[in-house]
Length: 321
Ligand SMILES: Cc1ncc(C[n+]2csc(CCOP(=O)(O)OP(=O)(O)O)c2C)c(N)n1
Ligand SMILES: [Mg+2]
Image 1 (cartoon, protein in one colour):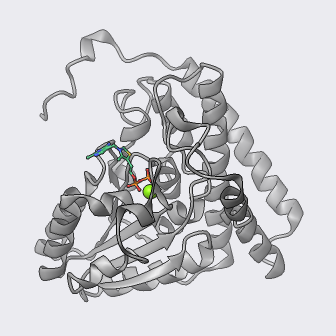
Image 2 (cartoon, helix red, strand yellow):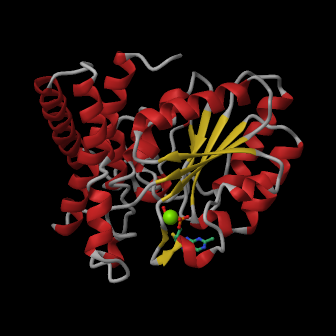
């Protein structure tokens, strides 16, 4: 489906939801209301949301440790996301998964994990099943730049390519793997080159431009769905926050670099596009922001008022039924 105004507004709403949700999470960690660690995708909202908007019923995604934006992008309920963050039984994984393991099969999000590159084999397996059963669906496998240095990445791309599987590998190249800049971990200007060596079609997209990402991913998804084999998308973006809770001071990068990317904020850029093309007026954008904030505040209350998982169920998810 082409990018209608209605869809652009929906995409914008989800991007704002992801941003406000994560800013709220950050504050709640700072205030000691949430514990453990988390990986925020602030600055990556276009890369995380726009590809999900191209999908249809039955399509699947796999996510990473930095998954909140994708969860919102695929339409997961923020109440259940927040309850999961609080470790409550109403959470999307019953409170057992937490920040790095948000999955929701009903919405099509079949995997998220702290194991870097862990989704690659699972995504290829899901795509193989779709092809084997003659289904019309496809998988988008989200990974980071760092995951493309994992052995599994190469096995996954090779199998997907020789079997012509219905899968899009969507690399969110945010310039770093923890504190390691991408240019120091691989002798390549563009990660996209790696797809070429497996005979896979690939494209590069401005990862902070939601409209471009939607249009280019939509075409890729379409051709993959039609049976032309997998595609690889390198989305060049940037994470504004630290890698996790352990590097908030960010000693490995300078303010000049951060300012450059802050000026390329994907949400601001989409707002400018919507205003310029008469898709929305500024009052409407303000209204969306207010509504999202209200919804998030309700979701926090819901999470806080939910029960902890019961002790009797402690072994419930250890073994598959
Ligand atoms: C298999 C494995 N190796 C190493 C780690 C430690 N680790 C956690 S996140 C991360 C960096 C991942 O970078 P990237 O794939 O670019 O994703 P980003 O954090 O930038 O979103 C590393 C090395 C891990 N969790 N799993
Ligand atoms: Mg990275």
